Length: 161
Image 1 (cartoon, rainbow, N blue to C red):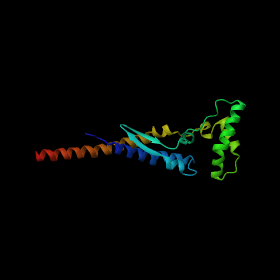
Image 2: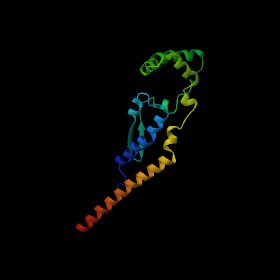
Image 3: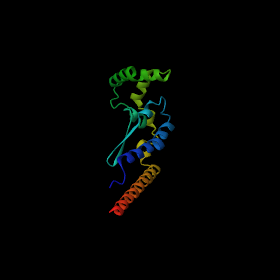
Image 4: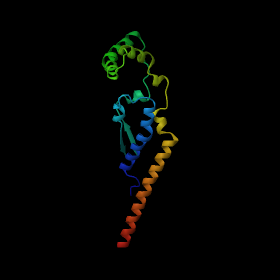
């Protein structure tokens, strides 16, 4: 007898995403285009829920540290590549009047603001008492329904016997 199904686990994960993770993400001002938020996905495997999204989500959620190699040559190489291939299109798509190479240089030297001044992180949200209580309550609700249905079915089969 299965007390809670994979689809029910996945549904609870989706609810956690919608009720806790996305609102926290939006409160931090990370929802500029909506593309990242729309990329969030939930899937389940036996006994666990897996959250995923675009690869760059990690940099918005936990930030990006400064380059390990702070030599002028390494910084200049990184700035040239990321300024031209990443930040140029980002600045343009946002309609910002920033120099993409200056953005790349600041990140290479200092890391992102989210890394330097972290706010509540993803794992803290998932591990919060509020989320834990919510998940526990939802699992309990699902289990009660499934147990009640199983008992009802067993009683019916006994009556027919």
